[in-house]
Amino acid sequence: MEDKQESIFKFAFDETSKEHIKGISQWSAINAIVAFVALGINIIQFVMASSSAYRSSAFNFGMRTESGFSLFIQVAISILMNVTLYTASVKLKKGLEATNPGMLGQGFMNLRNYYKIYGIILIVLLVLGILGILLISSFRRY
Amino acid sequence: MIKKAANIGGFFYIAVPKLTIMEDIKEDILSSEHELGIDNEIPGYLIDTSKWAKFVAITFFAIIGICILLFATFGSAIMQNLAPFRGYDSEASQMLVFGIIILLIVTAVVIVTYYFLLNFANKIRAGLESESIDMVNEGLRSLKTHFIIATIISIIVLLFSLYGMIA
Image: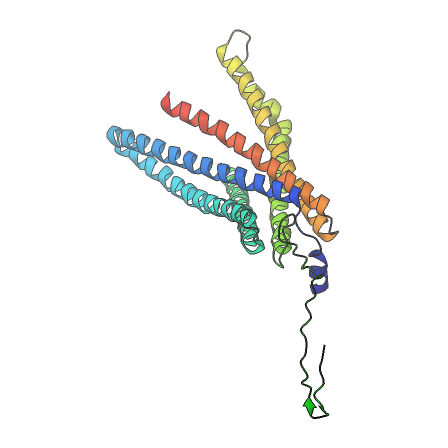
């Protein structure tokens, strides 16, 4: 494994690679910022809907509380993912500008973490979805 | 030039080593102007990224495939339930058709977006294993394209959300 690792390092990123990494850094930063803005809009919409629900009835406000919990989870996941993505973008950009392989490595590490979080969340959602389908189908039989 | 210390004829010769400077040797600094050297960790991170990116892309393709399969299986039942909305003069019918078209466009865009992510995963892994910088570059270009498409879609969705909020 170490020999294989040593053989991998015989080349370096060339100008084309740097251009692509620069593009990845720019667009991933924009992606993260857009996601934060969208999250802010969701929160504002929730607050506006909650205040009108509070004024209308206790039942409606209770329903909003339940959707508030799902919003909280959405906010937490979004912040976790997009902070990681933004950090990756910043580190990649700094690594390129300073020609620093260490900083570039941290950028790629954060990019890996971003996709790892993405994958884990997908696994959790798939498991919950399958459990939900099984529960619904088992209730229908009775 | 070394002068040997010796007692020759009453004169002492002192041995002085002369430092030779190899002026012709220039350090080949790979990480300077044209190339960015890769340290020991970057390929590992890239391979891990490619594994997770491949998983994410394949999962999305699987979900889309299941949705298409379900629609193909239960599509007739769904269309029967939507029969009251069908009719050439009905506004709801137009909205239904519009909705289906939007759904098809969104599906196509998602497939294209995650195709590039899958391409990145495959090319990066193949490039690192075969030590081919061209293949690694293709992988990086695919990832860049993936982020470009994903960002444009995000901006469009954000604009629609803002419009919905204002309206």
